[in-house]
Length: 139
Image (tube, rainbow, N blue to C red):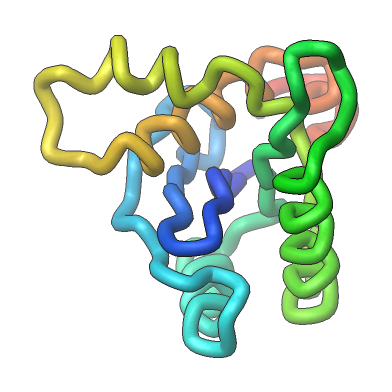
């Protein structure tokens, strides 16, 4: 099942996608102003073009496990996505994804935002939540 992952940021949103088997994750170009009209249209067009079955959005959770002001902005973005897409929109804890992306991305031309989206998607694909969404298996 193809899933698009978004590492949401007000100015730049990192984007990644997996192959239909959920095995290979690759970064895509960032989307600027993803919560604006043009940015949302790009996400909708990408989901349609790639035949995505879900969109995963990184939720910025504080180290304490609480949600801060950035999480509220992300929730607003998720609401916009839910209105624009006819797909499930899933939020996923993104703690440490940016730090892990920096350590992985030293030999790439992809942005740190899209690399963070890759880390987010890889984490989700290894989870029980993904197996349940995908009908109990990874095909």
